[in-house]
Length: 283
Image 1 (cartoon, helix red, strand yellow):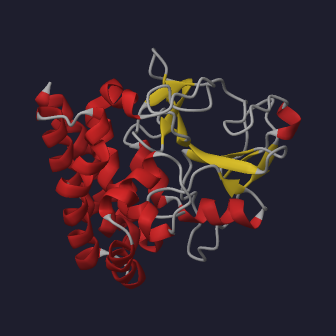
Image 2 (cartoon, helix red, strand yellow):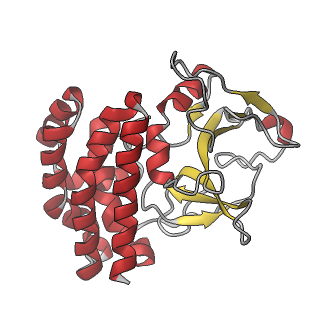
């Protein structure tokens, strides 16, 4: 089991290195994420070995993870974020910042980043054991474990490994996964295909409405930058998330690939859509 868990983190590190080289426009984001991964893996393994009680999660994260995340961010983060993280720790206690993200409080971007970076590996390690710390949400649009909102969706590989399989949502809070119907809005539940446009560099599938994303503001780009990623939007609630097709790119690691797809987020924003949950880096 430990070997399998270690392989998950190794896959994230390897994919981060690849995407940092492949997408220069995302290099700053990917460098910071690469610096965070060893700290997050250590926090994950620590919580697997000695998990905190559900009522002690925020305190555990504040004491054992937040200081390391703040240290790494100061060394490897963009200048503005590196300056804002110490400022937010001066204004609020680390435990209050972590608890704010756990329970859906409004937070400044630096607070949200700090809480997410520190908390997610602990919740990921605890799995269903962390559920008692949260108010459960019964609808399918929220994580069945912690009640968090979706960060992204992905199409898993089908059994024959030649086509896309079912759709899976990934929780923004604990990285838990759960199945969800295709062509259904993950924010409001809209099911009418005419209200659910899809935007992709490689076009849409039969029966889907949307458009082809071209250029993405990268003058030198002639081939598709993200042939395996698409914007799944809703004209009813004006929200969207990114979907990663791991059948189209077997090397994709959804959490990592989503971080690198900044041009797609900017494209969706230009169309007037708001992301259901901005990712760890705020996009």
